[in-house]
Amino acid sequence: MATNATDKLAESISVNVSDLSVKLADGYALTGVEASGVLSTSCTGTNGLFGAIIVGLLAVTLFIKLSGVEKLKVNLGEGVPPAVADSFNVMIPMLLNISVCGIVAAVLAAAFGTDLMTIISTCIAAPLKGIMNAGPWAVVVIYTLANLLFCLGIHQSTISGVLAEPILTMLIVDNMATFASGQPIPADHYINMQIVNSFALIGGSGCTLALLLDTFVFSKSKSSKTVAKMAILPGLFNINEPVIYGYPIVFNLPLMIPFVLVPDLFIAATYGLTCAGIIAPCVVQIPWTTPAVISAFLTTGGDIRAAIWQVLEIVIAMAIYPPFMKVSERVQAKQAVLAEESAE
Image (cartoon, rainbow, N blue to C red; front, side, top):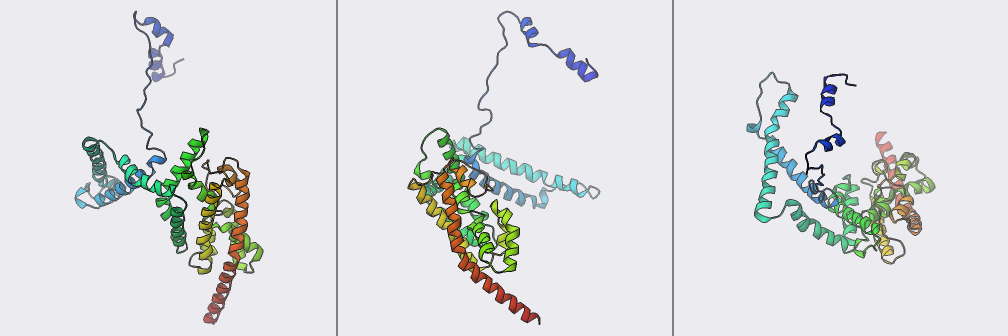
C-alpha cells in the first residue's frame, strides 16, 4: 500500500519479471551478462605493499610541497571561516597531485607498456624477496639493527616495517596458498613473517616475556617488580612498550645486549629446525598479538612440536636474561644512591 509520493511512483513503475517476459516481442528474451575484470585486485593484496608504501610517500611529499606554494592558494577574503578557507587552499594542490599521478601512469602505459606497480615489483620487490629467500641472515641483520635502534628510543617497526615485513608477509601469504592446495612448502619460504612474530618476538621485541618472568623469580628490585606486574598482561599478548620504556630497556646497556641478540638466536634456530624437519613450516598468518604457545601451534597448522619449541625458547631466554638483569639492577641501585647524595 503506497503511503507517500515516492512509494506511489515506485509502485507505478514496478513490474514483475514474469510479466515483463510475457510482454517481450517474439524472438526476444531476458538474458544476463557476466562482467569480469572490471576492478583489478592484482595489486590490492601483498603484491601491492611496496607500491602502496612508495606511492604513498611520493604522493604525500608532493602534496605537502604544492600546499606550501602561496600562488596555488585560493583567497576567499577575510570573512571566510579558517576551516572553509583551508579546504579551498588545498583544492588546487590536490588536483595537481592527482594530475601528476595520472600523467605518470599514462606515460608509462603509452610509451613503455608498463605501470608503476610492475616496475616496483620487478626492480625492488623481486630482488628483496630473493634476498629473504636465501636464508635467515638478511632478516637477522635487519632485526638486529631494528632492535638496536629500539634500545635508543626509535621503534623497531620504522626499520623492519619498511625493509622486511612487506616481503616476509608476501612469503607467508604464498605459504598459505601452497598449504591450502595441499602442496609442500618450498624451503625458500621457510623464512617469513610468522617465524619472526611467533618465534622471535615472544612477548614483543627482544622476547621480553622472559625478562618479566625472570623479574618475578629472581629480581630483588621493588621498582622492577612493580613494572613487571603492570607489564605482564600486555606482555602475554606481545605488547611490550611498558617494558621498553618503563623497566627500562631504552638506554640500559646491560639489557640491550640480550634484547638484541635473543631474537637473532631464535630466528636462526627456528629456521634451522624447520629446515631439518623437526618442526613444520609456518603456513598460517595469525594476529601478532596471539599469546605464546598458542601462536606456534596455530601458525604451523597444528604442529605440537612447534608449541614445545616455543616453550623451550621461553626457558632459554629466561636463562639468558638474569645475568644482564642483575647488572642492570646494581647500576640502577648505585644511580639511586648517587641521586640521594646529590639531593642532600
